[in-house]
Amino acid sequence: MDNQKIILLTHEYPPKRGGAGVYCEELVHASQKLDIPVEAWVPEYSAESEYVRNIPIKGTQSWFCSYRLFKEIWNNQNLFSSSTLLHFAEPGSLRALVRFAWFIKNLPAFIVTIHGTELIRFCKNPIEKILFKKVLKKAKRIHVLSNFNRIELLKIYPEVKDNVFLHPGAPARNLVSRDICTKSSTGNKVRILCVARIHPRKGQDLVLKTIQNLPKVLKYNIECLFVGPVVNKRFYEKIQKQGTKTGCKVSFLGDLPDNELREIYQSSHIFILPSMPRANSIEGFGFVYLEASSHGLPILAHRIGGVEDAVQDGITGTLTNSQNPTELRDALQHLLENKSLRFKMGKKGKVWAKKHNWESLAEEIYKIKP
Figure 1: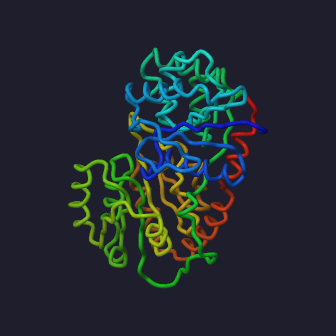
Figure 2: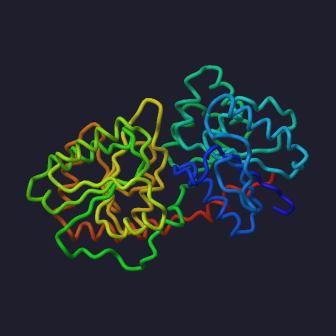
Figure 3: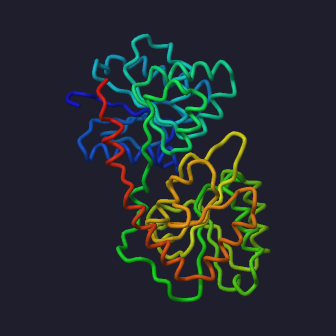
């Protein structure tokens, strides 16, 4: 990669917390550790640094935001050379590419990452679906984070098979456990943790309903914590009321800084995030499951999207049918009644999480020369 310049383009980046933003930040950080010359072009709300450049976009998928990104590319063509590689790393920047790839005749070589929701949203409009296909065929490489995304992508565009490569993500570096010991299984109190933005797709209401349907003797020793920003106020108000009826202590902690969230992970015993199928959204992978596994938490989740690539069913956690809530209740009850199973799954989860790292992804995704 001598003299190669790689520019990662994204419409989502910290401090905004989300899977795509985590992916972009961690990939940039890992690349710098490996001396891979990556510079991130990020929305104006993010902090600028030596390797991060702010551009005048808000970070949405609107036509205006797409136009502003490509205007920025157009205005900075003097920075590009024959060895420049652009990485459209998340849905917002990729959608801008789909809409305006024709805008620059001599666009540098590029690679793209598919997180999942693109396969639904970009293909609803017949014209955008055709443009998406043209972009994928021109891409040097197409990165997918899960086998589910690979299968779904090739159902729509089988002709791009040879350019697709699968490499999962990893836990966010600031949220990985720093405790080398596996979580103790002693004591009767059990803390159940759910980390995600407060939104119907994340299934927080189902978590509360599941707990409410447990035997009273089990609920007496349960504490349930929800961590994450409120992005749907009406849903948040609904589950706040619902929480008062579960029969156990329920707390909503909001969007915590990394150091506080890491401590919450470490003091919890079970992680639950039953993401729900939605018309316009897919759980493409799930970095948060690996974060929880790194802290020795057994996982409860639904078998949807790319979750199966993040959770080993029956080994690091239990995956259940999203259309059968009884399965989730039974799985939770089984974990609550079996400390040894929680310990066993947690121990294997720590090993599983350690197998995932951002450096290996950076080496894999950027090994091609344009």
